[in-house]
Length: 439
Ligand code: PLP
Image (cartoon, rainbow, N blue to C red):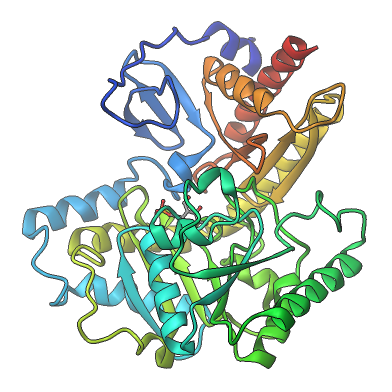
């Protein structure tokens, strides 16, 4: 019987025609034209099938074409697409209640947006209004969106074409464990050094600071994080100064990290955050985001605040069905189990490959840091070559990282053990091929 790897080799994909015309700004120079998806797989215009190890962009949280979500959207589409979000629809209220209860924030209020960027903008608006200050703290190597405000506080300059932010941002260490000045320290000493850095920054800040915004695991930054408990240690300092903690859960929410429903819960020793932002997976591919905050903070939004499409009946119908499926089928537990197996498998594969410096992450949010095999220097070229090779083996993955040298693996949370094995085999081949090419 043919092995999984042999099957993948025999199904090497046809070279794709570049379908994108000059007048569309695209991320990849030769993007694939995707026509449809089912479960954990998608198909291109030439009929090639791919295992989607990036879940869209962490947007397909449960599965592609999940019947429950499709039915909810279709039923709502037959009734009304949009009236006005000034009025109510039943599922919008129900979804807000569920998210408020799940958030862990006491006396929580929800405001729906259409994206993660808009959610973070709203969170920053709330925090700066509440505190009467336009200074914010962010982690180095962070990414929070692409509006003028959120790109302005993003700590990764590769994503930031301008530094003309309306906010003044102070950057703190703590988002990257295995590189930087504190990399050689153990977890406790690393945490202490980052706290000292925070105290030092606050000591030099000119006037009050509104908030710290942080991703519990940095997404675009390459699935990196500080040790568990670091943000709790930060929160103890923030609390002394009355500074708010905004947790950006755009990538880490909804059980993706396996151990916790939200990324912040790996840091819950000092209590919940003041503000939580979400997007991506909740809509299973539809444009949906939002903010959760304590009522007294949320009340800083004036009565005139409205997002025309945020919380529209069609997106909330789909999102509610998606969230219900996720909880009822314990997909957080599946992310923990299958993600744990996948991580072990990737570690075993990588042990024999000098091109891989580190396998990191948790649940179904796993990253591989790639380096030049000879020098150990970060290699963006290696990441691009692996992405390209993986595609030929029928596997879609993402990349990121400060130097563009991290591979990002974040499949839909329904991933089976067999599919994890299928993806790991294809990735192993792509890594070996790239290493040989670079040697
Ligand atoms: N926050 C984080 C952590 C993200 O990863 C992203 C997008 O990748 C955003 C915010 C922005 O979300 P969106 O692209 O939906 O505006």
